[in-house]
Image (cartoon, rainbow over all chains, first blue to last red; front, side, top):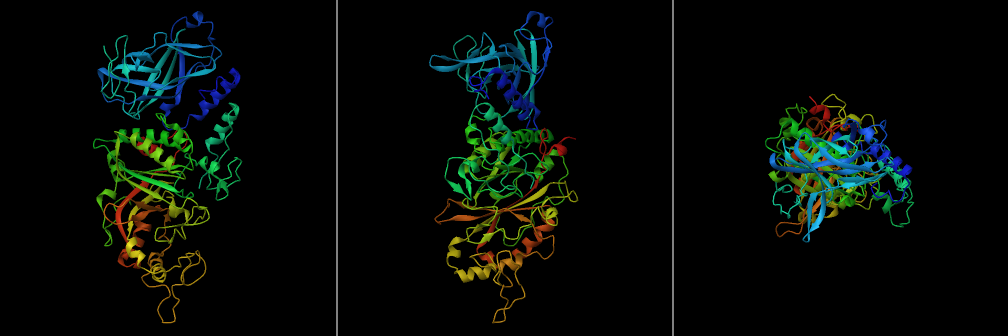
Length: 207
Length: 407
């Protein structure tokens, strides 16, 4: 579905997105299935954002399809993991995701991949994520993802992680994502500094 | 045989919506006759184009799991796993959540959530993944097992090797593409860590160039295998395969795995007459030596001119015949032909798979008779043995084993 935007007009994409929602409810693991509630988290959000109708149906704003997080056993200052999936925007206006939070992590950042000295490194996406109108944005290992740091509890495979995405206008969308065993996502992370090479089971993080 | 229109049919409508090539809406091959190919490929197997067979989908969701009474696919990987030593009910619940979601996607021709090579899942090729629990899973979860779920009694013909025995969990992965099978196994087993780790793997195959819905396969001794199987379509047979709730859970079944090594060097020295005498059946068509067709009942009373029974007292067919109506089970076996470890040419045999509602009641009496006397025992040796409880199926939004794990 992520490649359909260039082919279809917004109405068709929206229809396809709705079908996708129905189709992906296929596991017993409700966690992998994305969205699904959104609230106006910030007082006055609607007033500051005429682009998003205040009466919009929750879940029609932004969804995280096939969301998952890499399972990790560690907790503490250096324990971290990534959240991946497909952000889908059925509206006819671009959505700007500026942040995220989860009770399981002390620090959550939106990350992107850049080349640094010939190596792929992760760093915070200073501008957040833009989910195009009627389109999708892929979050994947080695690409954009949501980084959870300073984990307060382990993330065992088969469990779920609640994550709340925050858009520029203050709208909050909470999704339940599935924790999965995953060998990858060991990329280096460069928080505004030279890249650090990872040797651990998760991305390294220089604090 | 519960088959419904696979989700692929719906996916195809999206594909059409998106302006991409529409996939054919496939239903389980088990319930629908093969249709002519609409693809341009002229290559066909059993009247169905290769392209169509690649896209065939079997239903994951339903009261019963697939991979039991549906048409056997050509390729099998059977994986037994052991739970982590500290595993408990929560571990089992999380593992079942992962597998349920992964299997639903894979059988639908999609990658798993974490899949970085979903292209390898794009040909479902009638993939089925059937999940069973060994006794260890019930113990870890503090769940009462089916009364029959114990290791089979020791038989005097057995030369069991521990590397082929038992296991806390089993995944029976079958498809008509070995690539599809390999990918599914890899994703499911690596995704199970650290909750469960692989214990043993058995790979098998049947004749892929066969209309498996119409003909039985042959084993590597050249014999037709699986004649007079019970069928779910027969109301008298159905409770032999599927528990009606009287023994354990409705829609569950039991899986008996027996790895049976074949001494093909010794078999080479047996002429065809001897082979037919051992079996009690003709090699060419599987008919009993007393005549008729493969499906004709053997006439155990018929005598040859010399006064001896036409079907030998110790022939395989006579010894394996049910002595009571319940002594039947659904055989869904696969050949194996692995690289030999020593100087021999072959390490070959049969991955004997039998599904039945109560293995102790239905299977053990037959195995006991064969162990006591069967001319075939000269050529075959059981080297592995395991029994698993195949869970009932689940609906969308549910989890395999969910009712057992919810409390």
